Image (cartoon, helix red, strand yellow):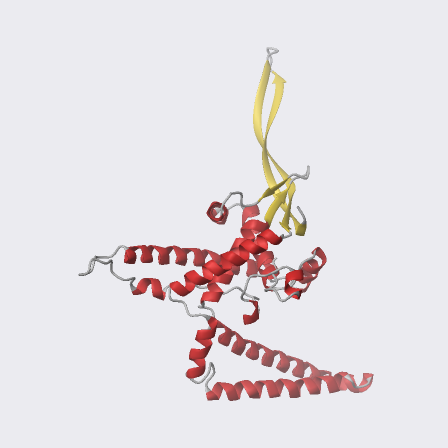
Length: 331
């Protein structure tokens, strides 16, 4: 199968070694002992084909319908509700937001002016330049906080839930291992989604260093592949060099979110089943579903996911160019 991206992880392997020796009586004695060896494991993400894209699109649609049925609002309805209530930001926050952008613009102009000075003049103003750079960084950080606060209001939507579920679906289907002889095998074997998901849960419960690191990297790469436009080994490597240092924290964050998502989904399904099997009403019909199903809002934040235009499952590049859906990243 074609590869989207491959990487290598170090792995400690325990092997049983058999040794033979002779005792004082000349008898052959066989002993076994466990030996720890340092090795490596080749891991890769397979390149999706048309069949996988079709399955992912159907999966996304099903999960989107499930979220709406459970009572989650769509992004469009939630945005309309905020608009009717006067918008996401209050008047004071809007003013503060505009002031920050103006300060950032003015600060950047001063930085450009100082950078354009000649050598001696630039040296004299080095302290001013340093202060301006620090001020600019502080303003950018505050603007980021504003934008994240707005984005968080749209986390509990049917599209967000469907997107996170679809990222997990891709992770289960793209992740593969390759041994020294070139034999390939899926990280999550199984004929169905539920079988693969069960293998994912087992791996998540593991305390082995290799399996913990493997899961973190797979979640990180597939998440970025899904929301970005990375489709080659070179693009992946460029991304990793630009984001050096945050991979572990992002992987842990996303893996945690996926675990919370699965737990919340199970609770929602249990609550729905109980509501469906509720007491029979006066006309002989079962009681209606309770509020438990409607209020279930699993946390679905995945860092670096991008904007609302990337909600639908990624389509191949050729389909996208022809007016198709949204590309995937990890990737």
